[in-house]
Image 1 (cartoon, rainbow, N blue to C red):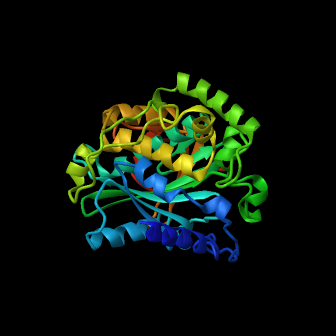
Image 2 (cartoon, one colour):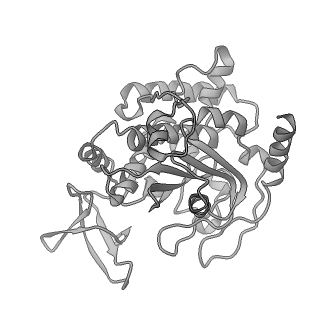
Image 3 (cartoon, rainbow, N blue to C red):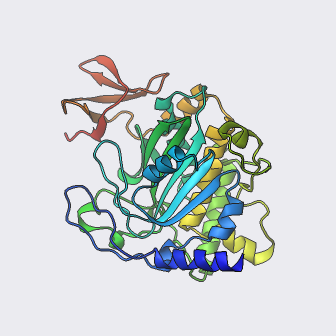
Length: 364
């Protein structure tokens, strides 16, 4: 066991430097990922993420593509997670590419596909789960931008890429966690934000000694949020080990996915672990809420769509929807989503629903 852990530590250390993906059409950016920013406590996460089985890669092209590869090779059984410290060719919707500098959580969750949830509902419900995780971590003002982004003050905080393949729903998440404005590429500074900025907290970098002042502020604010947030309830399930059957694994596998405020240690050490704003904390929070909404199905789809609509940042605003095939576009005032999750625009007094399309705010 000691040899295996040493090898894993070496792989984790060796896989955190190199070239990062840059936006499509933009000049290539050479960025270094320091171990303090990109390291994950892998041995601990394998236990704490149950019932999700963790597949860890220090470097990978795309976590979604890796999950597909593992699934096709019969090596990935849901629920599972594909996690990396360095994603070099992340995929977005269509031809979009993800920019993944240090401080960005890049991960794919594999969830057993459910007959209760249509494929086009998955990005909406998954987005709601990520939003609830952000609220739990200190950023309750984060909103949802249909169909697969999270925004804070009109800047992109996170993006999702959802694919249903071979009986599983793959949910790729790219979440900016421990970034401040100075760390954004110049061409993206007006367009993106991070959980650190949205929460107003000083994030703790992985591997750094905790800052007591930031810890105290984080704990006080999260305590207030958790008391008032129905979407941040803890999730408890029981572990009977990973199986090779997606559905039996999801139903019987047990969990260490308890809320940050519960268990896991005593005294100041436990408080420090609970209060650190890191990619690890974000990963655990997202896993808890995805487990709640998409594995255990704690709420009905109609109720989840209603909650999604409550957090939609586009409602009442002029929005442009662009057809992904012929690039034609229409502009109208967003009237929310309909009962099946389609985006609704009012165009010349007539309501029109869209099931797909590129969405952006329309300039006056």
